[in-house]
Image (cartoon, rainbow, N blue to C red; front, side, top):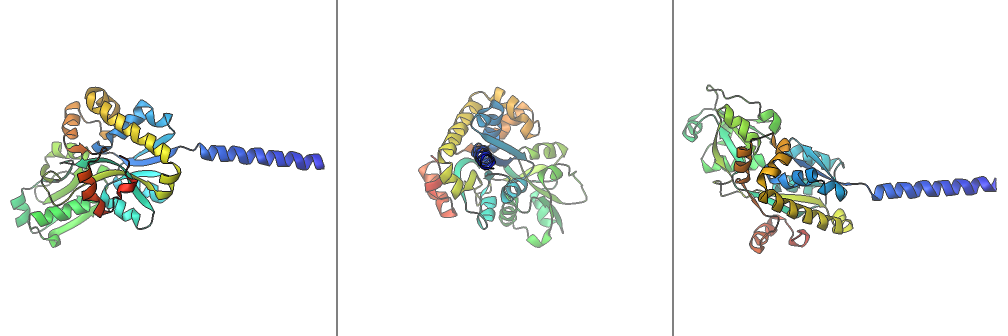
Length: 292
């Protein structure tokens, strides 16, 4: 009996120890979505840099899907614009800790009509991810061109669904989208009528966020992740042809020419300037958590 008790104690101790080790070695998971500004993450995954350092990447169709994965506890980190960050911050102790890029034309409004035609239209159908930065871009677009909100019939779709929309001459359509989803839409006949390059009232920042708890507990690992991203940006830009071959499957299999053009629609900011930090700190991006 005494031997049995000792055996069971040793067994339980061994099992608990193994479970603890498994939990300790559990990969850190990043939820993200298809967007040209997240190419360094796709590149790092394909090069094996993430796996080598115990990091797993989950790629989704939309910003909302990535946010949902984080909100239900299936990801330790996620990529966001400020819209998703503000929305999640209400319920989670979330902080941006790596700044990735700034949209410089990469988020856009497409239409089958001209601005004049939209201004004179009796009604407009707008397709967008309503619970995302798309909504803020649409709002600023309407304000810029004095188009009343009550003209719009807004339809919530993820970007894969939006990509299937066909032009209809009898209907005024606006679509809020981003690279790479704009490419197939433009091939169908939709054209860019506004973007983050010319809507000066909005700044779209993409960042990597996590909880304050993970930031503290995994600080050294997150610093390693920052180094991986910096390295990936450098390699990606130095050898665009090779990086294209590695990341195109995450970007709708766009052509090499389209890939090069898409890179022009963002500005890398993972090495943020003091001026940018001064500008975004009042927006809730605490400087003390942002890795340099």
